[in-house]
Length: 191
Length: 167
Image (cartoon, rainbow over all chains, first blue to last red; front, side, top):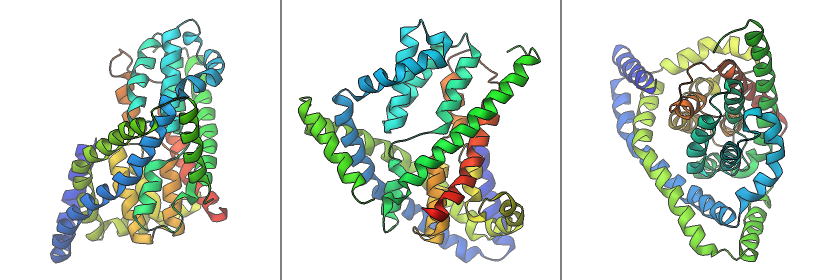
């Protein structure tokens, strides 16, 4: 999908600028953007690495285990197909913990495993993906790093608004999901 | 607000120390993962920031935003953050590049930039998640997931706009 979007942006952008006679601006823009992209990424490394390092201490201290103690009872009631499946429960908990704490690389493998374990129950898989799509995060590190890099006066000021908005949008998406499911399964749709 | 981050760090370090974690070793290991993740992003960021820069400087983005603004305003979405609403579910790196574009254009402390940041932090790249998580299974239909995820995307754009007026 990104392949199409990228090509469209380039063709419309460059084509449009030629048509409108703005090629000098575009030339400068291409060269400076490439340089800015590298500077931008380098600027992010500091804070993102710092947070990943700090959170790794928490992980090594056993954070995923504590998290699972709190969340596990909820998980068996949310996902019937994981009730008797220890492996599925662990994968779900690890995935939620990784997303919540921002453990970058931890989320994808456990997410794949959770879906594979529950694949006989489409409803559970869908609910799992919907919860995942709300993206509730303790600290949105990348966004904070970007704000610091681009000169915000208080980079962390978006924290509480982000929590509120995450919860609000999760409530809405769960509602829509439940409604869609009622319609879908009433029609006797086969998956 | 200024004490949140230092207190987080302090608590985590104390917990690690009490639990007997080799804190500095763990820190270095984690920080390395973080650095590698960002460095791996560099090539796609270059491509996307250039493409978005070209698109913006051609004047077409402004034209589209101006065109869509009246409709967007009615449902409470700021025209400036509309590109992010479109790209957010599709690609994480493209939305980073878009967010950066909004922040450099409007200023990091502007209302638009704050709204965009809140939206970015409270949504996911759902198309990626759906594709990658189900890749190894035979599941092809996911009833209800896409409408729910796209609703989350729109609602977060609207509610970010409202919340950022007050906080």
